[in-house]
Image (cartoon, rainbow, N blue to C red; front, top):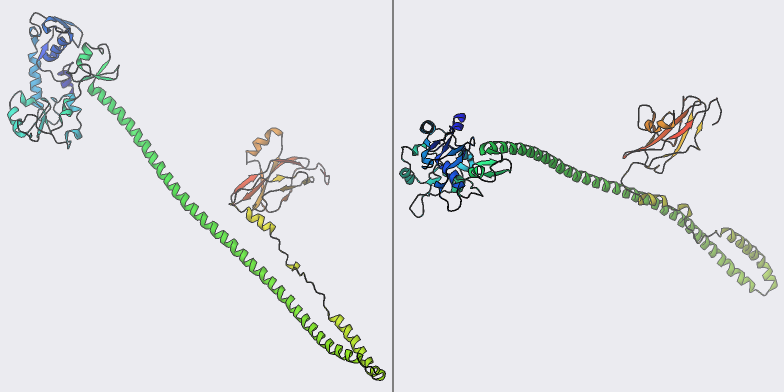
Length: 489
């Protein structure tokens, strides 16, 4: 049916022939299309009858007209009959061939548009709602006007009736250069919609043109392909967006977890400091109690000594007042001995007093701890250790490697790697290859002795410092075993 319809289509209007003329070259043309061709050739104020020739739009054969003009050409009655039968046979089908290519461009959603359409034939004010739109007439009708204007007889039986649509949707686009002509073909050269006159006599005469349906299918396919790619890309972006959002959520959760862990660790440090403060404070208090108890005993002894000395001093002073020599000699000797003994004993009882007791045994120095607290931060991979070749020693089959690290407190363990040195050129390649290295893991000291080496052989050593945050390796160091037993390097 598509092939037959294409054979019955006018090359100018791209619709089924209407009142077709049979040209001398055996091609056909709508009468109205032929008339438009003549009009396009007319100069200003020049009658159409003055044009006596035009070109066949199909084969470019020059058609010479008689004095009767277009009426002098024969009507293609056979073609018209075929078209009438074709339209009558398919007028009731949903995809009627009488529906032009322009009509097929209407989308189903456009046909069922919810926009309210009024009858364009009504004399009533306001007009009634349209029930049908005639594609052939390009007019929307209410029920009464439709019955009055489209009786069930020819030629109205060939008109295509659809659900009402707005006037702007059915009339289509008009040519920009020929205002009374509708666009019905596509200029491929200029990538532009044109009408039949643009192709016949306009600036698109020698350009490559294509039917709207052909261009429609090609552009639609291209748009669908691009749309598919865009939808695919949009889906990928949506997936990426979901992952980014999920990553943001993970960042929030992980950050909150780390903040809680930081608070917990700091609280633990504070608790440890408070415990140590309490322990050290208790020791200070105990030291204070011991010192005060000792001093209290010494104070009591001093008071006793003072009391005894005061009584003796009173007796001695009383004796000194005695003027009688006999009586004085009788009592003075005894008092003198007691005063001497009291003086000697009080000298023994007097303690050594340190008025500036600074509790030296409780000296506090938290400088190292303060420095560590000031450097308190989240854990990072330790700095690369440094191999101290001047400290390393060797025998004929052993090498003792020494190294230092700036981050000794943060290092959990060391890993020693070594391999035979075969030349300066292979150092970089050896560092990038893990297959040729011997590895000694989990070393806790800053030195290690490797046994079972070849005598007189140079080796490359590297030390890796490791903690929970990662690891970093030292620069390669070259060390050599001795050639003979017990020979120092």
